[in-house]
Image 1 (cartoon, rainbow, N blue to C red):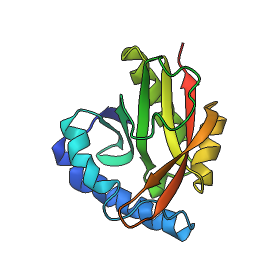
Image 2 (cartoon, rainbow, N blue to C red):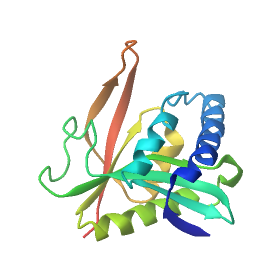
Image 3 (cartoon, helix red, strand yellow):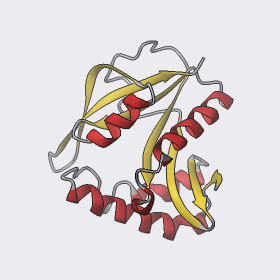
Length: 169
């Protein structure tokens, strides 16, 4: 498998993969992603060199975004608010490759990149109803911090998100 930063040519396949992920999540009653999020953010992620993909031959099997900020970063009590942190976001695994350890592999890749960026912590937010993701992060030794980030949308819809972090050094 090849791991690299995404390029604009990856966008159509990436969006197709995430649309299938969204359909699968909706079937499981994890209705947190839609036609806009995360797909409409990928182009900007690629332009900012923040989107990473894992390929099996030419097929994208997983992806995530790494950035140094997150809109909810001040809403929870991190272990060390002043430490340099990198945030993983929009982690997705191709539904044809579920239960093969790719989520764990991608978290390991994110840790490696975060270390090269001199981050002390890798952090993330996960919606409270996304039990499969919470189980993955817990298995990978991410620690839940106190507080909840309530992401409120224009239509009044609210996602309750927990903060998780892992110390890298």
